[in-house]
Length: 230
Image (cartoon, rainbow, N blue to C red):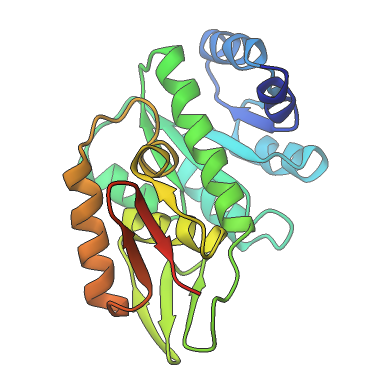
């Protein structure tokens, strides 16, 4: 339990929303989990606060005055100091075009309000775990590497663009080549605690990865899980 708290306390979150009630509610629940939280009320303020606060994650409302969340996210991705910061967009809008615009702006996740605090915390945990996976990825061999910013696998110099979950699964295996990741760990790290998927989902994603990068890199450990061969 102490280890978990220590892990949480190292993470800083910048919450950006122009509705004080929402800010107070989310801030309270995040601080209760041990996160260090700073706030901003619009996109312009967000960019200023982010420079000094250096957050691990920015929770960014889409509909805000002065500069909306989409434009703010685009500017974050263009900033050398902030470009690798995780960004999750918050919005009450659920239209497909808004989600597409959000991901095209460089957002890592898209969260529709209202959302239960427990579910929001779970999504945040999954995002932060994802960052840890990305920060530890390395080239396994001259034949295979990954580019965490482009979401591509590079096989013999050729880039293969991967869907988000396929890339996250491959990045997890990359984080510790040779280590066997159980199905439970894969589900937890890639899909998160509150996302209900079955073992078949993992198998399908592994099959698709093998189709794209070749059969020789990912080894099945029967009855346990998968590992990246070194």
